Length: 173
Ligand SMILES: [Mg+2]
Image (tube, rainbow, N blue to C red):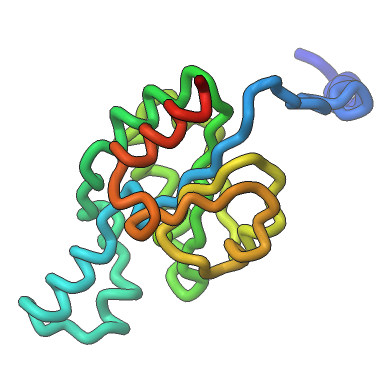
């Protein structure tokens, strides 16, 4: 059994050498929003509010919400295709008032995207801080307007995942 000193020394060496001190890649970086792009939060919210008469606050803070969200058509196939040529990250704004949303988003992407999602979740209330080439997002909220790469406005300029794939197909030629 290693001594306390040996464990401490080992940990210190690991930090001095730096774990993953550079994670640069030649692949362009794409950030993918979750709600409204991969997870159908809007349909769920409207359904609960209009059909089930639930209060907005109640839906907003419901711990089970993320377990129940369905996938937006085409997102799994598109993510698999894009993952070949791009460095993908899921970039989502969690609900501060609902701390479970932080965990639930992590679990949701693993369930839906499998290994592709491992270590690829970034949660931020300011998406404009991220460095990268493309951001696929259905709103301009939470700093999207400050993003220095190209914002692909999902649901507006790009109606669905087929149109997003078409965009990346065109720029690769
Ligand atoms: Mg969104």
